[in-house]
Length: 102
Image (cartoon, rainbow, N blue to C red; front, side, top):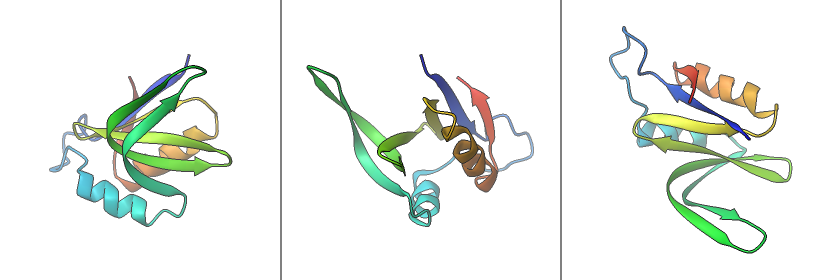
């Protein structure tokens, strides 16, 4: 089972802007060469396919796309590979945010 992490500013006392906005994410990830924006994330299983609506910033890492989902002012990512951890920490640092599990 994957661990889920949240990139958030909600625990920061001194930050005026506690939520991460869609516009801020679009601007940030547009400058990242290995990210694309999508309003739908499609999960494919052996016999089914499910689509999830939302704001997803898809990180292309090798042959895999990893979704970073913006939801209610926070970015969420599931850690399915150790390679995601440094990318998640880089994003949190750039957005002046913290990383918490959950």
